[in-house]
Amino acid sequence: FPVTIHEFRVIDTIAPVLLNMPADFVVGADSLSCGAIVSWVPPTGSDNCAGYVVNSNYSPGQFFPIGNHSVVYTITDGANLITTDTFRISVVDQRAPIVTSLNPRFYLGSNGLVTVPIQEIVSAFDHCSNVSYSINGANITGVTFNCSDLGNKNLLITVNDSSGNSTTGSHSV
Image (tube, rainbow, N blue to C red):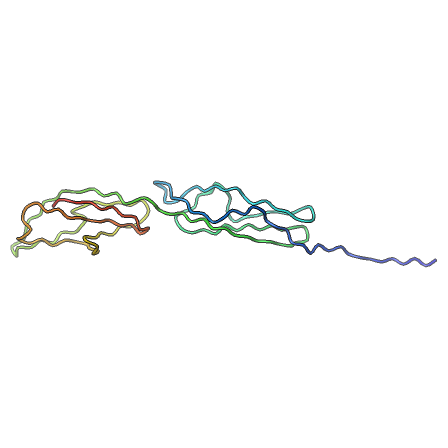
C-alpha cells in the first residue's frame, strides 16, 4: 500500500475585536495644573483563537494637558491580525481669569491727557494662558483720560483667556 501524506495548514483569517470601547468625552482641567488626570474603563478584547494582546498609547490615570487627545487601542492576535480603534479626550480650561482692581490715581500731563496701560488699572492672572483686556467689547492695551474725566471714573473691564473664559467687573480709576 502506498501511503500518501497530505500537508495542510490552518490559517486564522478572523481579526480580533475590541469590545466596550469608550466614547469620546470632555473633562475639565484641574484648577491649578492646566490639565487633568483622566480615568476610563479600558476596552476588552476577543478573538476566535486564544492568545491576543491589547495595547494603547495612553493608560487610564495619566495626566492630559489642555487640548484634544486621541487614545488609540490596538489588539493583535497570534496570527498577527490587528484591529485598531480610537476615542478622543478633550481637556478644557473652565476657569476664568482672576482679576484684582488696583484703584490707581493718575495725573493729567501738561497737554491735559494721560494714557495709562490697562495693567496699571487691573491686575489679571490666568493659570493656563495669557489674558487680553476689553472695554465695551473693544480690545485694549491702555486707556487715555482727559480733562473731562476728572474725578472718579468706573470702567467696565473684561479680562479674557485663550480658552474663552472671562471675568468682567467695574473698576474705579
